[in-house]
Image 1 (cartoon, rainbow, N blue to C red):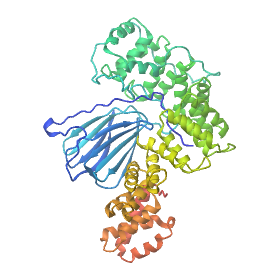
Image 2 (tube, rainbow, N blue to C red):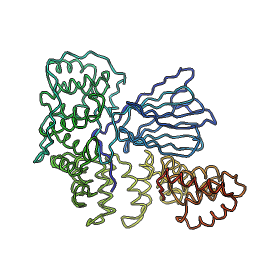
Image 3 (cartoon, rainbow, N blue to C red):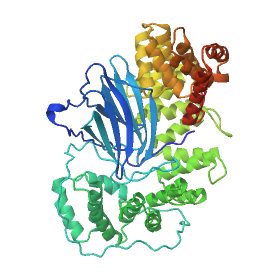
Image 4 (cartoon, one colour):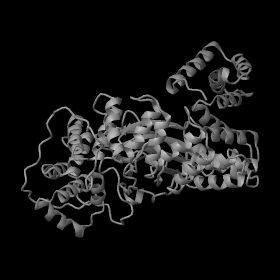
Length: 594
């Protein structure tokens, strides 16, 4: 069972497409580049409050953009552009952004795809820049957790995309406030509540953040008047509106002042929000984890499940504090017993891993079921995984797995749909049902799920549940390959190499073999080495062939003979260069082999 991130606020973020070049020089959004254009490089720069992705293009083009959920990712397609160089992954691990993937999504017509993998929907701007660059600016608020257990987004990380409002912030003066701001809580040691937390009836910070994002101009003035009169809920909502910068101009100084007003009246949501802002570094410009802990603890003393869970997350991730599994466990336990679904899921993961507690799969399942009852998709998926691949004293139960995946599908999980396709294609229920597998694969494949795209491609290639259709198989293999699916990369490469149902194409075969080979697939490294070594190859190709065959090594028994043949055609300096290529690849990829 793998750890997955569970986000409390699962709302899509509206995006702004900003055209900064002159109209006469800029193509329209989504317009393809001229024939023969290329994406020359993709670079990531980390600035104080944002990540900037710089894409070097050889012709004017604005990418077609799309945000996809479950999992969250931003997709940018550069139509008409061939990717120069190999597909690659660029780790980021800052704020909500995990990594970038750059790949040749389609060869004919050429489309280069850049995928930003994230933990939440993203706000972004696309800006054509001077010098043949397209820049994608993505605001971030703080660093990513060191350990991926689960996390909650800070207010401002997500927006309601269904309100139909313009994104332009409105500058308005704030009212004078009479109350004195609350000072940070004292630095007394944190005390874990001795009993289960019982939340009150007040809305929490996350609920008020959603309310702040839904504000209209007509609602703003009455809210300001209530805040000025000392209403803590209004002060908290208005403060979060200033923090989000959605309707009002972003102003964290004013946000903090308003939140401290409400916190001074022991308003729990304001205390939670102060903890969130302190943790993210939005109070004084830098993260203040100890202040965050104290604000969270103050809120937890009044029954806040959110605050208790956030303390657990800080300890389990070692975010600004020494990592302490035992403390995390205690805080998660109090919140989980009070009914917090995120804490229940995190607690299950700790029992599953034996992190800070004796490993106990039955206890893990108990808490997974508690979270699943509250429609936590990762928990439902993990229950399905454990039903198929039991651990400890658990028993396999394929029918229960199907029920779990069907429930996750009903909540929008394309991963669950891909798993249902696998179950029916592999006959896990006792017999193979290709018609049913194709139904589930297609449902997930059409929204971009790579495992489902691969499964559907295999069905078309083999004529299982559908008529044999090599071209359809190629299209779905290529779609999955563009998202990094090494099996799809390998299979479509063999189709192009052998001309299986489609015209043979050596360059495309090399391209896709290299995609899989770069990910450590030994058989792809072997096939790539063989193709590069074939008669008449240039010296550079033979050196590269030697490198790939050495990397394939013992994992492919035929590689030894092929390597011996290639070595005979190389000089000693060329062999040394091939060996250095092996060392460079292993350093870059951790020596991984698939």
